[in-house]
Length: 174
Image (tube, rainbow, N blue to C red):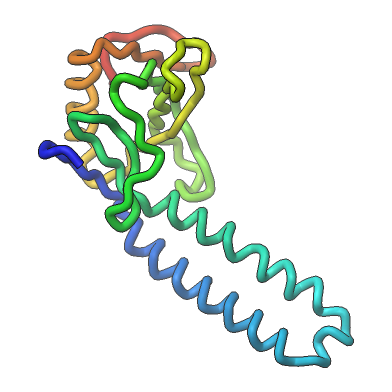
């Protein structure tokens, strides 16, 4: 990583880590017990065992996404999970930021601001796609937005805000 690294953590990540750990241990225990119990397969519980086993990677993936930190530095923007960068986008490939409101199960139905990073991963303008999204539920929201606005100005990255179904260009991330 570059020298000027800024890490923004989700304040609920510690809670999510504990819950995810217990869930994964519980699923693993159920799978091991069920596989060792030969009578379970005779009763037709094999489908339940299979669903539990196949759901473990999905639970793990959800945990990694929800607990990963937002990393911003002079080379780009992305996420990190236990120090490993992923979904990394260099500033040269960032085509725009799209700002909108989101809600979901993790927010208890409350609406919060989301920032989508639109990137051209191949370098050609026609290959633009929403590469990653950052919620503003981080430990220092104001600092993250201030820093993003510095890079918006430095690299002249367009910012599009959607409000009440209307998208408009704005000078900075609100």
